[in-house]
Figure 1: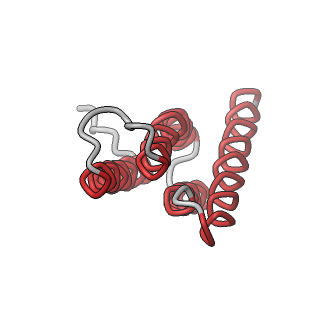
Figure 2 (figure 1 turned 180 degrees about the vertical axis):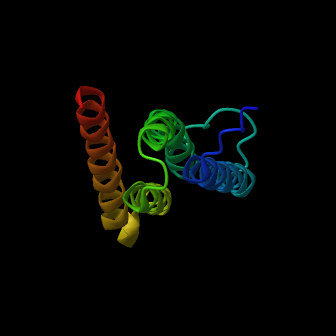
Figure 3 (figure 1 turned 30 degrees about the vertical axis):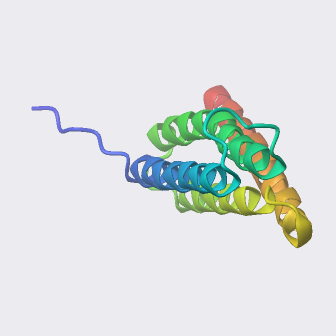
Length: 132
């Protein structure tokens, strides 16, 4: 009998990503409501920033989640992988907050750097795992 494969790190990361996605979506809705923009961005800077934060998350999260799942298959129970997944999610929250601009602009840069560094690190780790 084959036991089902569970990927707890991946499951946690996907759940966290879903919650961040919901949060970013709600922020878009709040901006649309407060700025009275029903469809699109209406040329409104606040709405544009919130929409781009949401879109940027959805542009980056899928590849990271695939890398996390693939690496968890290769390295089950890796605490390093769990830590990287957590750091990535924190970076995505920072980016979302930082996209509002103003004094939070530095937080956007930090979130962007975290995203790029974790993505690069996971890609290198995956390449090294594939070559082993």
